[in-house]
Length: 148
Figure 1 (cartoon, one colour):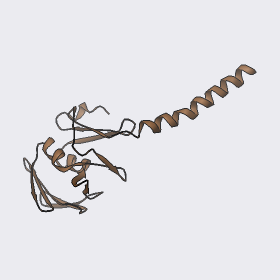
Figure 2 (cartoon, one colour):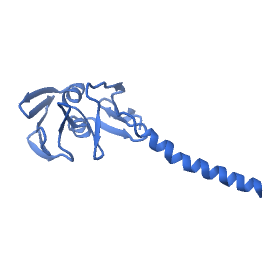
Figure 3 (cartoon, one colour):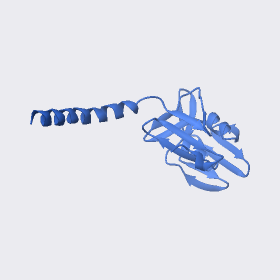
Figure 4 (cartoon, helix red, strand yellow):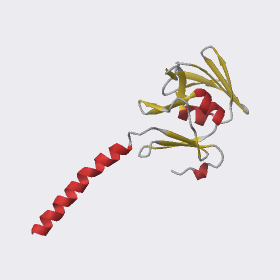
């Protein structure tokens, strides 16, 4: 009987520790990988309301888009894809068609950050998020090789 109580007590202690370690793993910086290559940004990625934001020039250029800035207006071109967006707005125009963003771009520390998933998918990439590791994987070449 004492062995059973000790085993149950040990199990309960272990079970209470699991949520603590899992939540601790979710507090570090966010890392972004494009086609397996780590993306260092001078302004670290930020999460707001469950969305990951990255510096606009960094993500567009990493995905092979040419970027033009005209005041608060962004114009990015990659192949036949043209994205136009006004910083802070919840809409963008992709190839002439208006689309609503879940979250608008924002400015942090003087840097413009854009929703990573929106930009990546608009440019034809696939995005996977590992909440446990706080890593975003973006795949542009072989969509079957994303780690998640």
